[in-house]
Length: 155
Image (tube, one colour):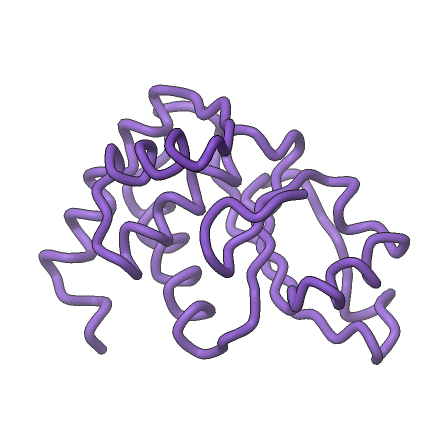
């Protein structure tokens, strides 16, 4: 688990086991979003009250075959969570190297207006390695363009 952008952490499936909750609490992580369609965690049921976290799942595939609607829905959800709180968000997938960083780039593009290439440059400059599937990375731009053109983010 690592902070990829300000207030946006990425991780993998092991980062949502009960043993990790104290670390989430220490890092002010209060929202966990799974972007793996087949990865479940029931934090509300299993999580003690002192480690209050919300959990949601909007699964995407690790490739270029995601429907535009899936990426738009993910972008809207992440943007909404980010704007409603000043707490950190943890985005998880199985390995924490492709889908979760891609979702973090989607969020940063919507919050800060970064292009996908500017986000990748930020990551490279700050020595934050990722292994994002190039087809998945290419599919982010149309979703960002759609959301910005249709002014969904201003509502």
